[in-house]
Length: 360
Image (cartoon, rainbow, N blue to C red; front, side, top):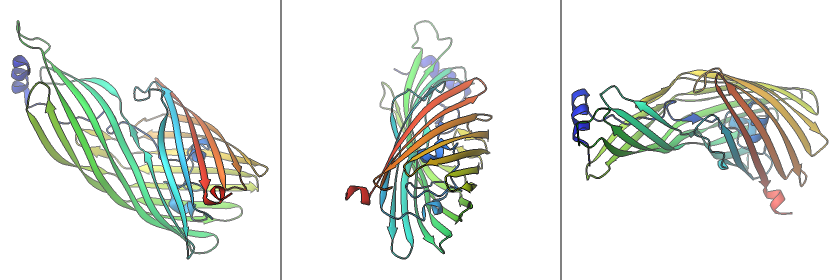
């Protein structure tokens, strides 16, 4: 039953609160990166990768020689309430070489994770929110080798997903015998918002350079609200905006077995109805050492300025093992992210399998 006292308090201060996303906008975001990139501190746009889609710059995957798929799983645990320590499968990507020195790449990756918290409203009542769900990032691109050392890519980048929030409104000072609370559920559906992506990659014996950009995107947010113990429902439709992104990176090869790389990711402010993530950037530095034909060891670090966790630093290490003459590979990365009053540890694992391995 909807509280009479609560309705009076809301009437005095306004309507029921509108859809409210988590405090960080769309939740605790995750960069859509390969496990190899994560092990190198998140450097990606300037590092060639022929086994997994490089979300930051699909042109980096233009040298793929065979069709392949990469599955990624992860476990994260720390001070973020969104992490429960259970394994998730945050990514999958495909590479399809085509005639004419073309490579089609596609993939989807978890982009946000939601948390539970309590918010106090300024309308004479207290609102407790419990969120679940998240957003997914998808990409499909076509890369072409202009020459043996130069590649370009063009494609589309999309965001979609849903947020489920259970809301309890409580009157802090109800009258004697009056009900003290009402509850409702918001189901927010983020319809796909697509933008154009373009990238360029230069690969030489000693230096790799890469850069890409994604245009601003606009999508439709539909919110269905159902009240507990009542047939009352409502539906609203709004527009949400996903900002453009820019990535750039460079990899240096002092020897044939060593790569040292750096990268920068920059994004404008991310706004959705009821929430905003500020603009900012992520700077990354990492390296990879290859021992023989099968083993690789990696390490790196990154620093966030603004965005969803301003001032945080992430330290990472990783390893890779290829087998079947490079037709398949296992990659592992571990991370530790720290900020003022916050820390989180993560383990990431991926398996790459190509058509060559399947045929053996």
